[in-house]
Length: 397
Image (cartoon, rainbow, N blue to C red; front, side):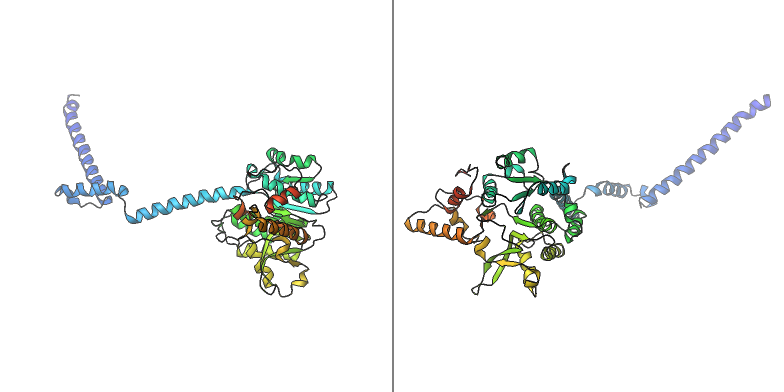
């Protein structure tokens, strides 16, 4: 036992020495590995200031701003902004709890009545913006087509608020209803379906023009193709019975020889499954450009009809400007202005007689005229007085 006691400390010291040596080796190895990872020379202890400089550079580098960094950051911000804008735009495709019932609701509506003419309009703006002018347009439709039926394709108007707007006409027995469209059903098995999928999947750029505007251009084609009838813009005053019209489109302008130079899609009259409507939808899907105003609307129908070799084979009529567009958009302001003298009064009376004799209606070119005040005694004021039903127009509107 004394022997054991005598040699224990020696063993402990040897063990301590070995342990200490191992620790030193580990530290040296770790230091070498760490230095290699930072690409620092092993003789950094000789030049400690250089080592400190490298450390500082490594730490501050992510915070350093260069021109290329700024460009990347700006590009990223633009991408995020564009994506947010795209998401906001795609809200026009949002469904409501009524959307799946679209087909049955339209079928029930037309089945409930003996509709002499099936009319369609679109409204993709908020219901609150459906004002007295738009309401008057509907009044003029039923004043001249009392046995017609009107469906307004709209998510926003298909609501309690929208119903309150239309209620004065419904209570008087007129057949009008707002129905939220089911675009998947409406566009099914048409070229419109391809466009819709490409927009939703990000394969097609919606462009800078509001997507709702271009969507309205497409919906009118699809709904006429599926159901047949008459499409009207909500800024078109109706002056005549439309029941005698079939497969018709109007010229916006003509040349000196009477040949049309531009057509418009604010008024479309077509039978169900008409081939020209299908061609319009094909053109829309294949040449869509969301950055050029009118490209997917008036210019589209003009392009397609212009390319036809034998228009008569498709059984449709192009009406002269007086039928649907009796006033050019550059001169529409005069229709809102009161006559200032006797000559102006004579012109107003003569123009009103011509409109009632030759025009099916008057397109108001809302893009140019929506902020123009309707003055008392003007052509528009006189038409409102003649064509209204509820007659709640005020001159401040």
